[in-house]
Length: 268
Image (tube, rainbow, N blue to C red; front, side):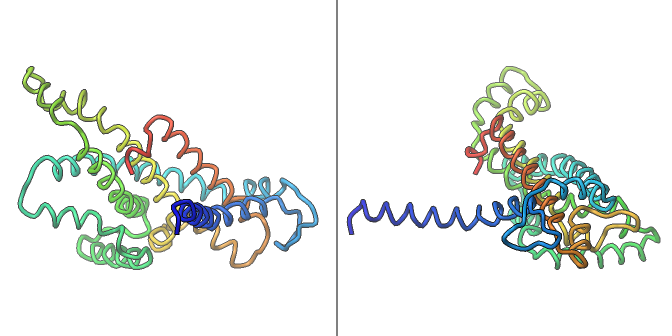
């Protein structure tokens, strides 16, 4: 088989994979404008009323705000813990380093529903031990979301640190710069792309999480994903598609902005 034929096969297969990924998203965006009272095809017309309806519903509006706040705080916590952890893993060999690195990445391996149930059981055991409520509180929810965001921070910042040039840091140290100054003025700018990518993916992973929130969210509070599941139990219209479309554009905008300043292709 000639090289030209192989290239055509490769391009065709790549196009099919991209279509397989993008087509469902395009259908969701399209269906969010259907005028049908019940989600059916073909549409009888098009309207923007589903977006207005979604925002007017307290469950979606409040769930969106809770998800945004939770994801923002979880991202900050994951960065505060993940950057020092990555520095220790890459720069300072110590016994058990490989085990700790594997342990930090374990939330990426465990299925979400299993992790949510395990965290809920662990929180209940801690409540019995310390006589303090954890499950169903804002603090418990933030701990859970920070836990699922932390592996992305460790993975991406570690990758950036591994590829960073240490000779610049050594030169700064030889000129009398303190470790804190070296980190702030040399190390952090050199891994900026990894930190921004870690913040982005930590935010997205927390924002779209369902399993941990389902087990740990408290009474009177709900995340956007739980609100979507509850709505789908009794309704089948384009309101859910409208909410999903907003999520798609938010995540897409974050990707574009981050790539503009951090060039995510250099990280992955």
